[in-house]
Amino acid sequence: MDEWAKAERHAQLAKQLYLTGDFAQAAKELRSAIAINPYNSSWHFNLALTLEVMGDFEGAISSYRRVLELEPEDLEALNALGVDLTRLGHYDEALEYFERAEQIDPTFEPCYCNRIVSYTRMGDYDQAETMFYLARQVKPECPLCLYNISESLYERGEFHRAIACLKRTLELDPTHPHANARIAETFWAMGELYLAKEYFLAELRNDPGDVDLLLELAGLLTELGQLDQASEKYRRVLELCPDHVGAHFGLGQLALLRGRLDEAEQQFRLVLQMDRHYRGAHQALAKIFLQRGEK
Image 1: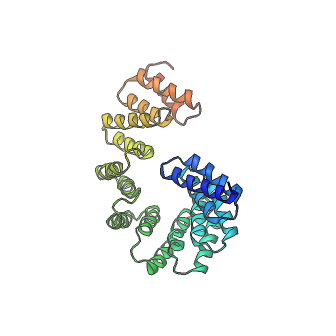
Image 2 (image 1 turned 60 degrees about the horizontal axis):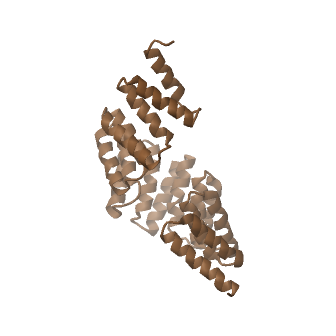
Image 3 (image 1 turned 90 degrees about the vertical axis):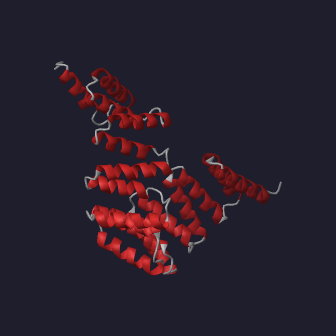
């Protein structure tokens, strides 16, 4: 078989594997294609996307850099690289790539939209808001911009404005990822616990397998005193991730609140078997021993 045709075959197989959710094998096939023909920028871009899904942002960044070596004015690669650099906390470098995209095409809205996040994480909320208004000049109703600026507003303590932006996000995109959860977190920060619960449940209906969301909701339910419901959420986490140390710790806390000291001790000892430095576990065991008088 001709080597170039073989590379195309690897790339096509990678696409099929990606669509079926076999990301590790898709990445392997793309690397095989790139090994034969390293000059196809789209394969490097697709590899970066695949690595992102797998949570390998360092690897994705390397692939996006390779795209830009081949296509220095690729706007999507510049933007995606900026997003991943922001994820890893490299904010100054991320801004450089967003600015390069703006210089190439000032009407490329994502270069403003995603700078909102970079500036927010840097604590420069005024610049974040400036980027929001620049983005709106290009695209007046962008759900991602509204979602991104909500984080900046939340950090500034402007909770009502943050919620208004998030609700508008959902009007424009009813399935926008994490928007309901962010509303829930904002209501929680305001002390509106029952409203927070309502929005957490709405998010959970969209993504019932989100472990982090289940843990957050379990924490809220514990604060509400709804211990049976909190326990159910922690056990659901353990169904999805049997070795999740945080879920075992949460069950231990619930048992302690109920006065079930033996059950609590069992959970906290299990936590320390899994992670001997888990924060709070030693202190929790100490509380149990004090309650028993075992000084």
